[in-house]
Length: 449
Image (cartoon, rainbow, N blue to C red):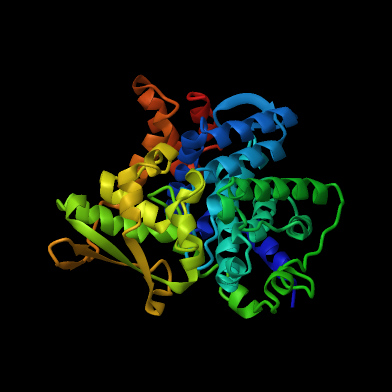
């Protein structure tokens, strides 16, 4: 059987826009627009400024950043964009594997494309990279996280190399070699959970950067192992200590689109916390006051307890905003106190408030194995009058409407109200990337930067 990376490369290079189902195109456009908005939202944050400064110091030419027309090397722009998309922990996720795809995919596509690139080609490249991450992530499950690795960092470099190769018109042989080179440098550990430092923000950018460099090396004749996924020292053997199931990974490639499982984030924190926030905000919107609440019981899936629930002392007293983004009690407390959660909710000034910390201490978790599929959650409020309220989920606003509001909020960090038409043009260019030259997105971004 052919090496899995070569199978993906053969399939991706033959992919045409007519092969993409309408729902795949629509979802990709929505998630691409989401990534663009996240770059804007993170642009003037401390980590955003740091990664942009380093990218500019690396110099080079052939690319640029979304909102800055100074020339950069493609690998440098990939590094910065991937980190910016992930800076607020607000980007899309595959629930099965907790891979964050679009930060890697957008960063690689932007770095590899130029003003002559057709939007259709970029769309197909994004679709191929997305499907690769969906499939290898589904095969890996949460095994990588259980061993202390972020799955985005392990598989992201291969997807970046695939995207870059398709955008640049490489042969399947070159793309498979690039995937092998990129995957040979895979890594990315979860130790940031211990102290709230910034390494996780860099993971998608580092993956995209590696994929771009690997693509350029492979195109220059530098070979890499096409058996990177399934060889005896490939990623599955090395990271997961098991063989890859080829039939499960590749059997319906092209006819079934597992990338449709991706979920947008509507809150800037660990994705497993989102269902709890929806329930808490729903109850607040119905008129529930914090003063009524004695305690909150969160039913959680066992697999994410080490990520957002424990060590409990660390979750109740987070060291900085990034650690707060992975704290279930802090996040739920903020939602109940404020009645909203946005990209400023996890700043130190917000999460250090006495009323937030005091309520967080009364928010506890109980493991429920029945919630283990996906991002399961239950929320029970115990009121001071003795009542117990099991909060049931209700239908909210349509996803596209909520995503558009998130995008416009992110762009408002860079735009004055009078520049709203440029914001709308950028949203439309990203949402319909396959309908026009790639340069349309670049020109729309240039009107803002």
